[in-house]
Image (cartoon, rainbow, N blue to C red):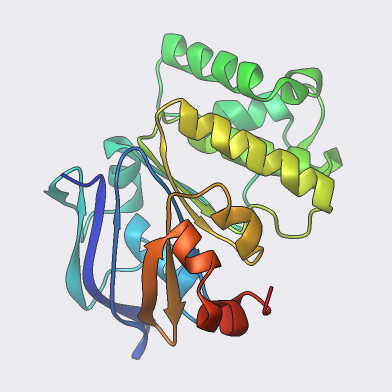
Length: 236
């Protein structure tokens, strides 16, 4: 039984459909990368999976249970977490306060355990725990955003452009941390413009184009496919 199953989902905004029958599957022990050009529907897919958008047709299953129409907070309770590309921390709050916000629904013991896990996973956050989020570097803010999502103890983590705007060395560190989270037993799905970097840590990948499945397969298969390299990987 897959951790996440998305079947023939049609979804969008108002009367405009962005996704036209998209399907993906994620196992609990996988990192999966979704690539495609701007406007392909990648972020719309994440918002639909998390319940911010309700699909017009198709269904979404999580750990075998249909969750298509559940609200985001209910999906979080079931073990799903989402880190958007933008506005993913509270700039005026300290690092520690942001983590408390991420674990707002937890009792005091679970909250303490989650914060300790965050500081163990990202030691720089403990060093900056009294610093306001707006003063952190881009990489540190991304680590804080991931840590906030982890406060709910998810089984599945959706990451939208985790390396966006980061210097190459900082992006490399963020991806190292993503692999560490995966090693702790969290299934991870990544939307990423830096397809090479993301696919290199992934088990499988999906290519979306114009709101539809264009290709899927192992990460190596995608990286070595001449047509995909030319169209989606800059010919590299």
